[in-house]
Image 1 (tube, helix red, strand yellow):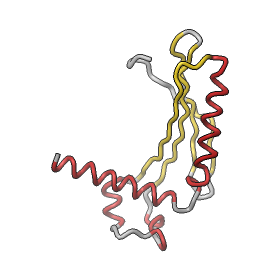
Image 2 (cartoon, rainbow, N blue to C red):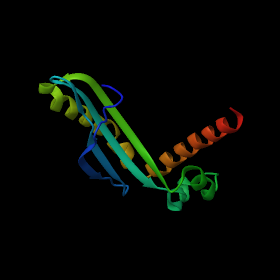
Image 3 (spheres, rainbow, N blue to C red):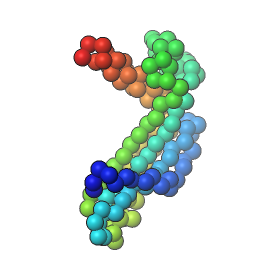
Image 4 (tube, rainbow, N blue to C red):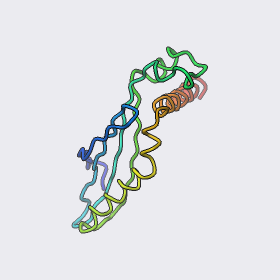
Length: 137
């Protein structure tokens, strides 16, 4: 695939998770040559950064305003898995396999009540690391 070829995202499913979030599943596959495909499965969850995610047992030793200042009003969980040079006759099977393995391995975790706070805190730590690199790098 060349750099000038863009991959279009086709939403294939939305799953309401038991923690109130929505998992969006997309097909970002693209034909690359003849009957060969770049198969791309994508999953995304957008999480509003809200103080209630940090109440009770999820309360970090970090002021909520500091978290929001570092990550903004929304964070996004992204997962992508690809396979290259797949025959057109195998495209659907390969894509469905990527999707099913993802759901089997991660659905329980991303549905958990503490997933939003863990994701926000992970991105907060990443943002702090980037800020430190910018200051001292």
